[in-house]
Image 1 (cartoon, helix red, strand yellow):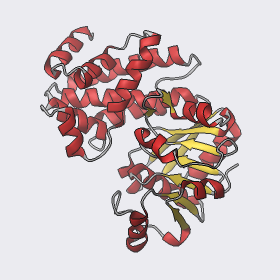
Image 2 (cartoon, one colour):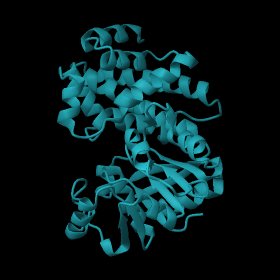
Image 3 (spheres, one colour):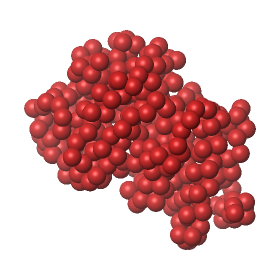
Image 4 (cartoon, helix red, strand yellow):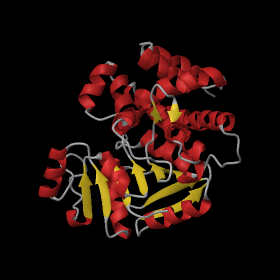
Length: 329
């Protein structure tokens, strides 16, 4: 199923994945939406906007701004666009996706549809479950760029396809394993962004490390309650793809969701924080989507509710976090 491989997206995580792919593959295809960015990439031999320290042999890359050309020529498509832009990137698509192997490395949820990306490709583009995979785990693009040890999990209902893709991703600095819990990995990756915003807000409010640890402990329990409700299979919430990803996103200064939350805790409005960051904090959109989904599931999720109230109801962070802290033990 692997065949020609394409990266769909031009951001930092897409750039990091391209670096990993070229460790094991002689050639990749790469969809970048703007032709001027492609030309600048070729001229500089690095992404002009993200992870500029990572050098590429562009003779090993076929760039294209035409999504149909990419899909027509590639069997494996790795989607790495921010979730709010996924529908826009696909709106000109005329080629069929149902026979492709789709890997989503998007740690977000499709707004308005309230679907994680594998569900979106399954319901909208008729891609069968066995051709859908997810790439998860604690993996900051900046550390991949530095060649620092990284652990990734490939989730797919077809275990052989998961193993094949995981083997292709593995290298001296990338350790891989597989899972069949596609939905669990995707929902966990959405929730950990929400909880990282909460961690950032409390950091901005000067709550300190003691409270942060209690917040992360409660976030782990909240995540497990939700995953057990939405996709009740046997899983170990302490695996790196769940708890590990939560911790690195909640604590690291590389985490844009934590940075976004810290700005909110420091008194920025949501709009001003988004303008100053100049990057997408997936957890902002994920908060609304998860709140909508949980309206039907009724899982006890006080951290999600607190972040939603701060971001969308404009309740003062000082008030909302104080109320949340009184619910913790």
